[in-house]
Length: 475
Ligand code: GLN
Image (cartoon, rainbow, N blue to C red; front, side, top):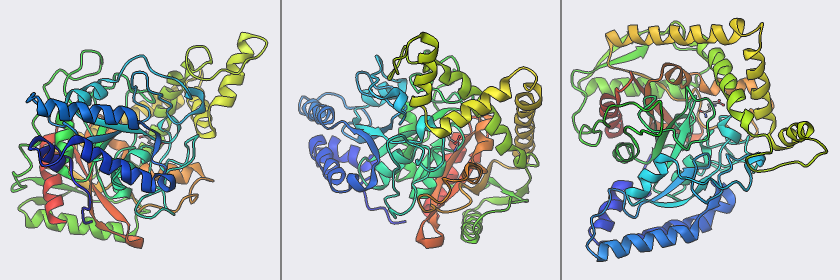
């Protein structure tokens, strides 16, 4: 895909060098929002006034000769499941409508410290449950490349905001693919970091053992820079890794000579032929650049979807118990406390969220726990073992990010199971706690973008980014 919008790296450099100002860059992005947002619906909230104030501050700091952060003046959008102090955070759910968090998520603080200008909170599938952003209580987001199609999900608003040029980059969260799949469907780079590499503090929890935050960008270099800003240890997140954030911007030019690239020997059914053709082209490009292709297998891959759709709902049923009409957002007033809980949750949650809460509660209930949740945990171990065996033979694995290109709005809404199948290639990474990213690699059916997924073991980000940079050069 040609890259029509200014990158994070270019914007930061041009502002720092005085070629342009933060206010000018922001107004440019706000003008695009004005033009197309009514059609795309990437945002739940555009924070125009706060953004203008931040941009003016950046320009004042430059005038005063202050030291600038690496993202000074760069317009960035945030998925609306990230806490922003005093600014509504809804998770695209009626149950949280009107709730203003009393603190910022750590990633939000880090972006602010780097000088980023937050332009708004983006739409998502309610509580990040979905693969198309059609489960939002506030209406779907459309794919800016073809507005009859979905942008993917659940971070569809964050993907659309970058693809439409409303922000130079955005943050999403990825529990089973919610950054990588929309990145693939919108022609962007999207990163799911190693579990624990980016802080989850202040991210509304969906499935705590799977959730990770990561960036959407136009380029691999932008994604590397964003990762360096948001990543690294956070004492406020007990699952945060103690290691310092590895440098990613410095490895992008290292090439792939000598790297071993794993190719899935037994590809699951259901991939579009054009997607498979792009995979062949990706292997060929890496081979031409000096890498070796080795066949690997992940025998437990076929069980991962089922395991995920037990583990994630089980954790969600517990995490979402706190929305009871007492502490957050909406409340339906009734005669007594108990019926207030029920009435609030019945009115506040949408169909998919209720489906997950019921699935999860069932999987955790006495008598079924071992048969469902316990078995799912065993699959989690099996896929980790499969990956461990595969990574003895290769450094990274390449798969499609999504079996298909962006599908038409409404195509899968009547059958949740076909929607769940979108996640076949992305879910294993979350179950294992590993790293993976999607890199745009040409187009498939209907001239829509195809994403190639680069998977790496835990803390394999530097190698993963090297391969991603090579794919980007080749495309
Ligand atoms: N599509 C998956 C789900 O609905 C993944 C969502 C996510 O990563 N947040 O659970």
